[in-house]
Length: 298
Image 1 (tube, rainbow, N blue to C red):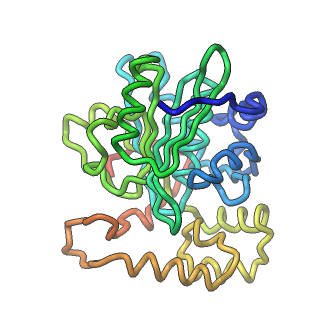
Image 2 (cartoon, rainbow, N blue to C red):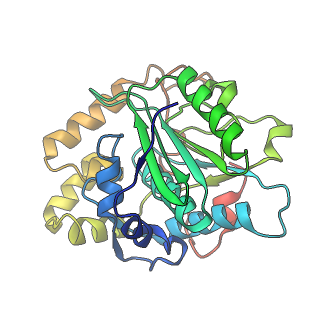
């Protein structure tokens, strides 16, 4: 079991995330400590700032309500689906800290990472002797995660030892030993058996509208309007690509993503490994005030 160390500035971490479900919509929220903590663990936003869409607020509220409301005695785990690069990982990482400080949970987060020079990693934030503690494991493989998770459950109980998963392309690729997760962020449609559907909330985090991208580009990244037009043209609305600093980087990122798809035939029904056709790329919610589209069966 990795050794824990006391988390520095826990009160400031708490202030960054404790009011998550009450965050003002269409406002920029600063999370510098969470951003710095995540910088060597796959990242969480590019600069420590989050622009909070109504769509993000709705998903966060659905997840929290579904997990903690008194009328749900058989609490369900959550699966957040959406296109690559739209903020699923950022939402998951911020909510991990929210669960720690708002609900006093002990949270493990296991991330599968695919960028150059990145490796799968695990981090933990929880409590020991009334203090907030943490540890991180770089280059962490599934058997190690399973052992650590099992030990945390033994020490703290399954209701207090929470596991969040990020970066798994397919539900069936999740090791059996960690399928009792609390939350999963994935860019694929999840193929669940009928019996499994009764135990989970499947939520859609929609794509970003042009209006929201323009708001983020001008307020956080200080992009000029003409630059955003070109970024939007090449990125197709992907937040991750839209916010790259150099247009050539955007082109290369999109080229790399499309070249990784082996078969885009509409007749192909098999997804293998990383060769995925993103079936949710153009999935939007036209009326974000209506929560039904976020949880409708996809």
